[in-house]
Image (cartoon, rainbow, N blue to C red; front, side):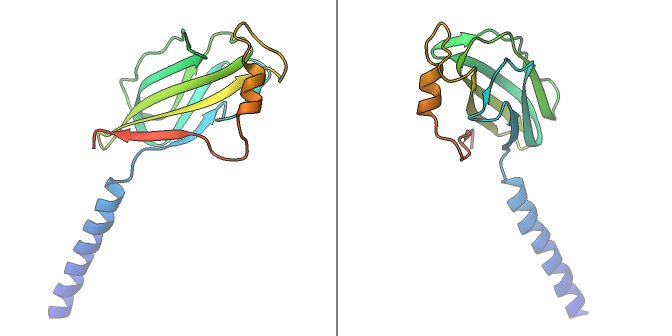
Length: 150
């Protein structure tokens, strides 16, 4: 009888430890289209963000330099793993996207990524497309994520 009780206790402790570790895992961006650091020739129809768990998308801000690009974004009322935010026609240049989500664990997670529209040498009104190519390193994941409200 002691072995059976000890086994049950070990099972409960294992579930508690592993369950606790899992609950502290934070939400992460698993995929974005355009991808961080991508160079696309034409404006994508949508900014697509996918996460490793269901979240509510609270913020999606697209900027070109210091200028915020007007997009039709409304924070999500329901949780999902995948979001598509419609994009207007974008001029050539390097764009930054700042996003924020609320995970199932009630932690707010923020991050950002960047992508470029157009070819090197083609410059839009802001004249920053060429600088974006030369100033951006490729071959590594540049997506920045920070967690708040611990």
